[in-house]
Image (cartoon, rainbow, N blue to C red; front, top):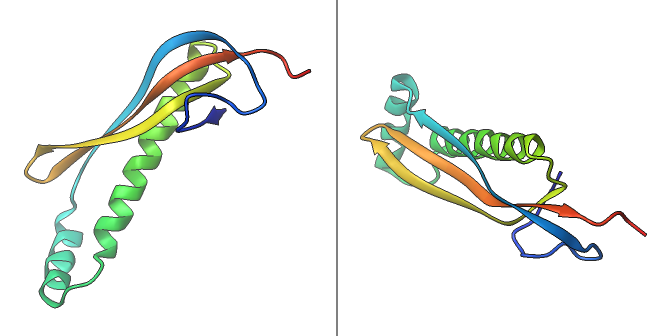
Length: 107
């Protein structure tokens, strides 16, 4: 599946806009990792426990977006973006969204 942040697929013609597709993932922090992360904030620098959590959540949301696009018969997703929001004090949502499109066959 082609997923692009731009609104076109270089070298290919978009023949149909299928519509909005999205994938959502909500993850909560883990108490054990949270304690280690809090200790890291005292000395500063990157908090790898949170970096890993955010990266995994983004990948899950992206996988769900691709599944949605495939289920709708898309060849590609254009205008792809991520959005985030806090759902609860210890949980965050990542939304992957874009426009599913059909492409003309390669010539």
